[in-house]
Image (cartoon, rainbow, N blue to C red; front, side, top):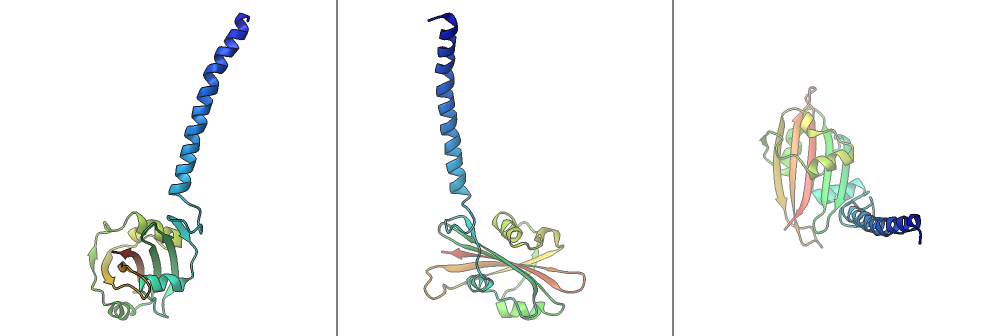
Amino acid sequence: MTRKQRRWVLLLALVVPLALVGAAVGGLYWVRDQVEHPADNSGRPGSWMTVPSEYVVEFSRVRPPASASDVRWSYLKGFQDDLAFLAFRLPPGAEQGFLSGLGVAVEPDSGTSLGGWPLEGFQRAGASDPKTAGPLRTGGFLSEPLPGHSKRLAATVWLATEADGGTRVWVYAADAP
């Protein structure tokens, strides 16, 4: 074997194992990405599902009044707990009736309770960003399981008054043990 041939053999002996290790590591990262970020509507835990608004309304136990406009929603299928996101706008004068129907008392919120899933869910729904809406008020409730379900529901409602006196509402609802 000539000197040139030995160099090629040595080079291949080094490159082939490195290429195999690189392919294996790349494959593991691809699998991990597929597990952590499943395709939409796949039904797998962590996938964003396309569901009718009635499904989100039933899950969240929050029904926008007939006078509500710009109603948007999204739904995330979780491993153990599902999440629902609902956003809409109430016309001037409709806020008190909406809140009394929910039985929720609201108080000022600095926006620190917003983050993570709620923001991503509202973005997925195409709703406006609550953090840019001005002074927020928040309230929450815990409700008993629906028939056929084993978990209660925890929901948080954020409200912001708009310049014309209307109210922007964002709802985040999740299964609660």
